[in-house]
Image (cartoon, rainbow, N blue to C red; front, top):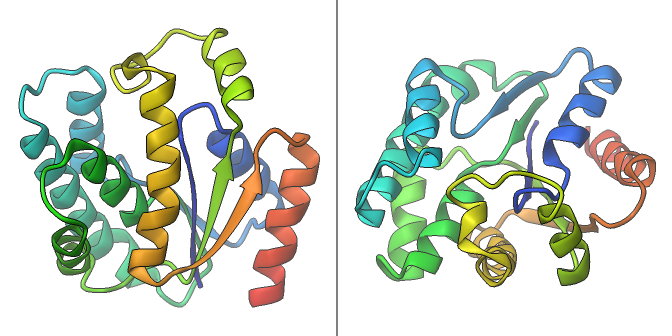
Length: 193
């Protein structure tokens, strides 16, 4: 089974991934972008803000997704795969850039993934007040520097993207305690295995 955690920066994806590693030691953990050597380079380029073209950024993410699917996801289809982000993020961020329509974005991501998408998505959702607090406590990368309104728009787009891909989605209140979130995710994964 292939599942993915989604959410805007500071929602707690990385924290949850680390806790899930202890609970699902047999699982393969990966991330997008950055789950392959090519993905690591792409992630670095985008987070450093070196690209002027948002279209180029989107196409690089699609290239990473294709590579990630070919090298990591497909060969390990018999395992539990838990990913930090997936095609849902790619669509959500591209939607906000108004590069192309939603149907085109869905088609491009289906092409990049050979239609091999997660069976389940967990979206960690933050209320605006909690997002503001969390952002005030850290240095911002180029995406976080776009501001709270931008991140909240992305958060809504994650749900839209997941629905457009037809993936079973669980929206989880990320302002809850870390332990409660972990229990909720763990219960849903175990229930689907």
